[in-house]
Image 1 (spheres, rainbow, N blue to C red):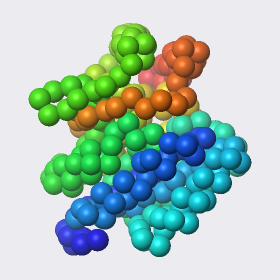
Image 2 (image 1 turned 120 degrees about the vertical axis):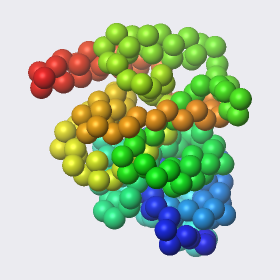
Image 3 (image 1 turned 180 degrees about the vertical axis):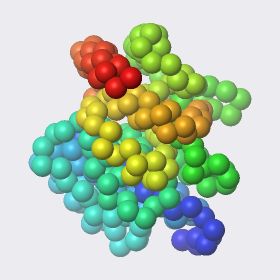
Image 4 (image 1 turned 90 degrees about the vertical axis):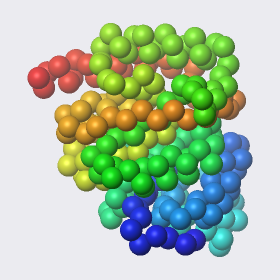
Length: 252
């Protein structure tokens, strides 16, 4: 991989909980896209206490890919299922020297070429060190969003509820692909404690506290079957938002 010496360095964490069936359709193509780019990107699977079957898939996949992709780190295993937020942050804790920290959902809903496209845009942004980039499932002239009707209704409902509690210049707060400056993460690490799916909200809130620019980046997004979100999980997520709002309110 040819790397520009002036390029920013990225650490990309892939939070995985029982993703052994979907990750093999995404990770090889992601690594290939990164290899073909001029970007400096480290990639790491973070295993959130997956079942043994899925752990075997991770091991086999790493055995196949590591010889060809030196930027692919060893899988980071967590002892038990801790939640998406804890998993993302555990991965970011490994990135001591990277300029920018990234997480992307392991299902590949945001495809490899889209991931690289956004990273290139961040790399070329002179204000990247002061910006949180939140990708969004919003169609425009260059992006497409393919989403099941029921999931779309659930997403719109959650978005309305979220707006009643938190105000951000970001329409889609839950898209699973975000990029933050490492310096910000290190400064606010002790305050980033939300373990589950509501961690995106806490991350955006802390970024606002740090006076980071919040930039929404539309991406092409394809609904991939086999996700962990359900109606029950959506209800739990809203309860987490209420709890998080109460916790943050006490700080004010």
